[in-house]
Amino acid sequence: MTPTTPIATSSPSVDQRITSDLLRPLMQTSWRFYLLVAVFGSIVAAALTGWMTQMTLGFGITGIRWPVYWGFYVTSFVFWIGISHAGTLISAILRLVNAGWRRPVTRCAEVITVFALMIGAMFPIIHLGRPWLAFWLFPYPSERMIWPNMRSPLVWDFFAINTYLTGSVLFLFLPMIPDFAVVRDKSSGLRHRIYRVLALGWRGTPRQWHRLETAMQIMAIAIIPVAVSVHTIVSFDFSMAPVPMWQTTIFGPYFVAGAIFSGIAALLIAMAVLRRFLHLEAYLHPVHFENLGKLLLTMALLWGYFVFNERLVTYYGNKPPEMAVFWRTQRESFAPLYWTMVTCNFVLPLVLMGIRRFRTITGCVIASIGVVIGMWLERFLIIVPALGHKYLPYSFGIYRPQPVEILIAGATFAAMTLLYVLFAKVVPIISIWELKAGVHVPSALIPPATQEHPLGELHL
Amino acid sequence: MKAIYGLYPDGQAAQQAVNRLRAAGFADRDITVLSPQPMEDYEFGQRDKATWMWWFACGGGAVGMATAFGLTWLTEMSWPIDVGGLPIFAWWPNLIIFFELTMLGAIVATVATLVVTARLGRPSGLYDPAVSDGKILVGLEQVPDSAVPELETALGAVRHAVVKTI
Image (cartoon, rainbow over the protein chains, first blue to last red):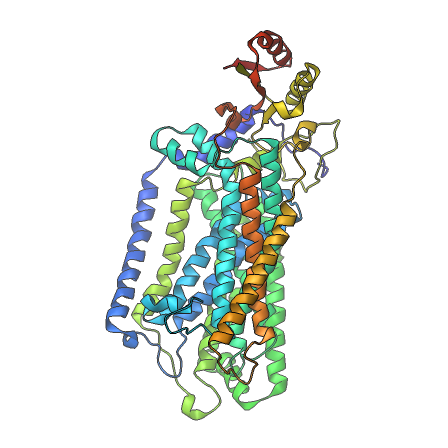
């Protein structure tokens, strides 16, 4: 098949098949949906109870105390903001390069961004201890004219995360409008009324399609630098502080690379789960996993490059406070976590994604689970060993996470799954119109307006 | 006055229907085309392509940047804090706020332009749910009763056409 060969014959029957397959999860509810909601909902409820307890009893029930004030919560904050780079950034890049294989992938990815950002943004509020005062972070003219300090990286976080969240929600919502129109036309009763509102009167005129595609193009261009800025600014939370192994110029790109790395891993896991449970085998093909697997391999190599740079420069600098943290992670108390991180983030993806025979869906999922674990450990190992061993002995200390922190941090994975399950229940998880556009055959007489890489055989 | 339209299985058939309506003396602005996906590979899919959206996005970005400048200037002058010897209004850290609000302005302006120019959220005209099943609708919304038989013939002459009058 040449790149310009049509993928499949476009016909109403193929369109109907796509529509019915992708609307099935919305129209039919199995017992497994209720089970998943019950299980993950219970875990989230338990974590909320833990948070309420923490608010009632105070931060004393956590392991966060001098000198390690940033523990599991800030680790989870950085981790989830990193995971959020899966969606919008990858989707935007694939849209701009017009990669045809993006079509079944983009929405799965964009959803991860929105939910991961929401979860990540919760952690500074949880970490505040008194979340009802979170509005103090907002730049508003208070009674005493006390404004937030615009030179604080935490205020930069506020602007960056909110810009990225707003952009990502809109980037996710806009291409959903034509799909809402499809659900509107295929449903009745209350569901029809709800989707009629969401569809905003969408009809599918050439004007509407052009405007939507132009808007998506502009937003893709705008959202890429915003995504890069978000994790760069999160890295500034660390690199602006005089803490050993933090104050380094490499943290910006290192964090961005790590974020994309963990984001791709999360996307691969989500796609595999969706493919299995929603029976989307006809849409999420092995080629999608293979392509993303190659991307995961690239990011694993890039991550290894950054870690090597960070370590080598510190080693050559040979400053005692930095070397103390260096050896703490490599040879002393944090060594088991450090080498687990290296295995999960570098060795495992290198083997599984580097050898073509292992680059299967199962291989991608195993490597991705490893990367998610490894990247969480990476965030933890950046924060805790350095905070517990700063410049002078009076500031040395240890951090022992307490049950409430473990519960809240762990429950975020359940929250992510719960939100994803609920989303897949109300919105087609694969963009229907984009998929149809992928199987649309251009006229032989008129050259196609756009050229793209073929999706591969669609076995419909 | 009646509305008349045909439903077609593919772009080529829809293009033929559009051409027949033009041959019958109707202008492009009177012909409604609805498709389940973008049809840029056909001539009718190229209609209404010109847009000022890029310029509005740039304008939104400029407004965002101006807002960021005003916000940082106002806040830092209203509550001057010495941070590590930095000037009260320090450009380098403020550039981050400028950047974020510039991009936010561009994004919001883009979406606003989309809503207005794509006429989202307004009462809709001619429509048939068969479009969601992959059919392409080509029709006219305001047709004199006397012209209906001729148009039914014109729209129905295209292969696999389903013509409806309402």
